Amino acid sequence: MPKALHRNKVVRSICCFADKFDDSLLKNLESVRGILLKSGFEVQTKRLCLADEPIASMDSLVNDDSIYLSAGSVERDAASSSLAHFLSSKNTSFNLDLNDGVFPEDVELLQKIISRNPEKTFSFAFTFSNRKSSPFFPSADFQQIGFSIGLQSTDLAEGCFDLKGWFSRMRIVWDEIIELFNKHPDFLGIDSSVAPLFSGTSSLINLIKRLHGSFDKAVTTDTFLKITDFLKSANPSPAGLCGIMFPCLEDFELAEEYDKGNFPIERNIYLAMHCGLGVDTYPVGIDESPERILEILRLLRALSVRYNKALSARFVSDGKARIGEMTRFENQYLKDVKIRPL
Figure 1 (spheres, helix red, strand yellow):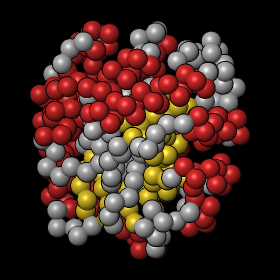
Figure 2 (cartoon, rainbow, N blue to C red):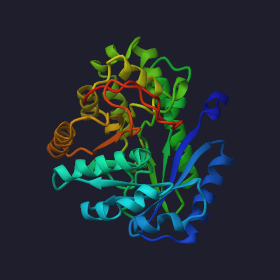
Figure 3 (cartoon, helix red, strand yellow):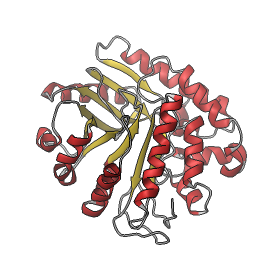
């Protein structure tokens, strides 16, 4: 295997799924991590998604801040009653399933998170027609016991000036993971979603600009459709979402496009519908109209229902910035921008 490819094999997440916590889950996580490290992978995070553990008890389960926890998809009443515990938790995430409809109290929940502990907006999302067994938080949801693996596949595109070369590298890495775990009884599969981060080789927009010269131009080509078709058809063991993420503030070069006015909410939804997974780490001002947020959530739900498509919405706020002001997230994973109206 080429050295550049070996160097860029990055696993964003290993996630073990279970109904209840057990110490064996931690051993399984470390065992899987060890196998990947021995095979030349970089492993960024270890995660647990626990279906039947209350949010209130999550922090007490694991005495290790490096392990991220999720309660998966929760019902509206449980989200409301657990809010105080969620806001005081360290590494706990969850998503609110809105398949039954979107109501003003759902937006009120987001507003409470923003006003009481805005850092936790990073750990919360609304979901529609969610897919099970994705290792990516906060959309992860339990279906069966086991573990799945999610990659930071943008790094594999280093030096590529066409999709064919990138696809070839992804296929090699997927096959290698299958070879490592195809006989493991708990292996659920690979979430082949493109999960960009920061800038340079790990940014999807960096690759897109190499291919097309500009993000603006690429939006009206079939490039993103080709990527999604490959992610879904070529993955030998799919699990979870298997699409393109457009994390507005985590992909720093996408955040720059947002700052230039090239990534308004309607463009985000347009891209999500034909190849993406929803609205992700999208900045919202503390003075944004609740009615406007409600409209967007209702649109996402309607589109999800019509096309039977998994979509999510993760709006983030620093709890201070209004529309027209710069954010101050103090979060290494979020690039500060000047807030635009939805």
